[in-house]
Length: 602
Image 1 (cartoon, one colour):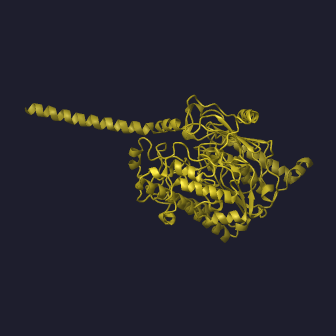
Image 2 (cartoon, one colour; image 1 turned 180 degrees about the horizontal axis):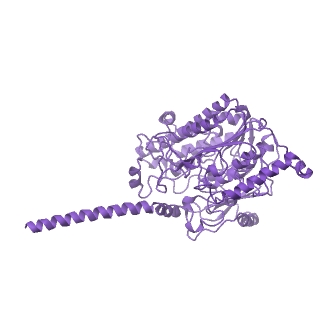
């Protein structure tokens, strides 16, 4: 048990004691203030489904090319959010999603892969859920929920930091930013293995699997350990789709042959047109084009275009494969008689991934030693290190600007679907909502009370809005800040200031009116300097409140990732170098002996 666990247990015991006092009628004022606990039959089951690097328009319900009939059905039966935002990176988003707190307050300011070593001991930068912070699983568990998890975790390592130490009864968790989808092996040199854990212990993984199917299989198996209806459950399903490596069974990918042969400019244009038709982009609003360093589709030769188009066919197939897995989960709940009483939440942790891991320095040496290749034949299958790259990422980020890593709309505007009991079906909800709103919403669905000993959440419950209310969760003067490794934003009313760091950004602030210009094409800084100055002051207050630490001089995420990867690989590199030296020494010794013996004979 970790040293943080006793403090967390004290908080949970305090919460349980407070609830017991209410039930027993101790203190009239307290009893009147707290809601009566709902019976287990009245409280819904909750399924939280998180995609990895899924763009706003990737799902069929949002106008995407991939077939996602099961998720689309849930969208029709519930509410689709069109103004939902998250952080530009996975760990901060996951921390906010599961706690309702700003990522710095929760303990996950950024991701470990790009964190400077000198910042790792600072509050908010330890990249683990802080001991005094309660996760949604802990809050619901205190109310009698069974709590289950399957998928990517990436929220701290070791005893007490994995899901079993954060309120989950059963879990199969990948403790990394990603891994291969066909086998338990790493996908980049930062990792020496794929660290899978089951209930906090190293997991024995199948020799061959496909991640989306494996995760749903494990989740349903753990679900079936208890009879239907005995107690409500909270299930957190964190897909690897569509994170690098982009992989999918050929049967799914083949269904999109030819779909992306027109290239990324054609795809972005088509998505922008669909965004207008679906109301994701106001009529007449402009959109940005591609980044200056983006390649023209026509500049690729025929072979390059074919492998690029195939990478997107696999991308769409990976989404469809995950949707099929969701369909199997829905059918299992229906067979158990629990579907009608289940709230579903489906969202993404950030915008689409632009990285090209294949052409990074030394990857031509690393890939074959780890069983990877990048070629048209078998692309997306076992042993394929597939990716979509920056141009496709900008295309699928439409109508937003830029992509993952950046606080521009392409990096942080994401899909959000909520359906189930208590949700008016067929609703389209605009207005600014944020990743920190999900935990308090689901806590309210589950009857979880606020705990005085734990930090107050930053998010707002969407429960009234889901039930048919029209009052927005944030008023015109409310402010909402965001910061991840220097990439920052602040929202107030219809306006947003944003700061994107290099290589695409310059670290300067820009001002946009998102109601009229969600594509962030017209910087209003010069036209409205007073508004810019006031919002910058709001942002400075936000940084002070949550504890944003200054980055080292000259910091860039790309340089830090390379440095951290080398540091992580140093023991292996040292061993390899030592082996090479021993081999060379042995060969030299044998050569010396041979020359000596030849000299004696002479």
